[in-house]
Image (tube, rainbow, N blue to C red; front, side, top):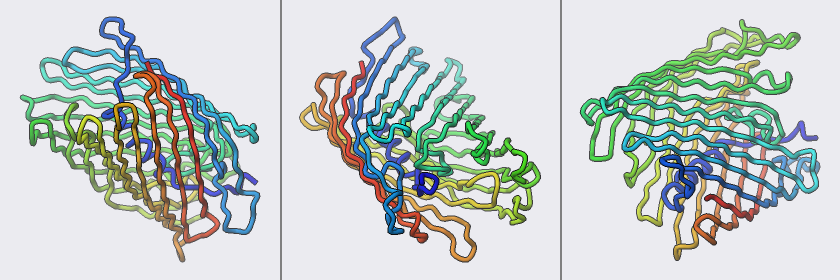
Length: 416
């Protein structure tokens, strides 16, 4: 039964989560009361109770009921952060976040995910700029990956995302930077081999100061994706898998820390070229050139009000074994408002469309909708209780992919 579960657009949920995190950095109270010199230690724990009326994201359009099931899910989410500040030079952050999910009835669906983060930002007196951000995730949750593989099904995997930069600040007017990024994901079971890949990317760019806290930038990157698992008997080999190279140019605006605007306004263009001519079935790979976006901007209008905007446009490869891909285009907006010093209301929504290149005669197209509202009450500056609602819907021109999901949430969180 679960093998037939429909997929949804993970972009929508990821976009909402990302801009909520951005909002929180502006509106919520700053944590870190435990100090050892310049080292700040931030422990945290959140317990969340969720009612989900469609835990496997099943479809109700085919006159069946076995694909839809509701349950209560308890999430236990521990966190621990370490932050060391280099006076006026940057900071070093180490962090851990966990999510342990327990289902009341469908106990076989219990899962846990753990994430570790290393983040270094440093600028030397002579103008040297150094940045390293590394995130390791060990997951068995049903939230899938950017390619939407087996979304709704508990799937074991790990991934590591590394982003680095090095450069020079020339007179606080011009920054010249070089980049290296690497992403690898590996699934536990052999059946999931189509999602095992390693991507590397090199780049260079510069930033020019436009206003007191505003910079314009342009960047050029080139990279490659290598699918590294080819089980015997599948017919997939290095000569017919979906390996590809790309080049991209991005331009936009970014802001210094502390500015009312925060994040990046980032748009660009990408050229994608496959390494092999055909897939395992003899279907040709078609190179694709298109515009891209990775915009995430927060506007802190007042100390208690923040508005966040996210825009994403990317090409998503479905897997290593065929020539299918989709264009993922979306927009999301969230408003967070503090009320009477103790209450915080967050309201948001997002929309994305997934345009597939297949089937040739009638390509699949999915419209994804997401809405969320939460109300948090700050009992103490370190203790918060909250309630919320999330709505997700997929509308596809292939009706078997349609679904609707409602989630009702109460939570208690502590961060000291």
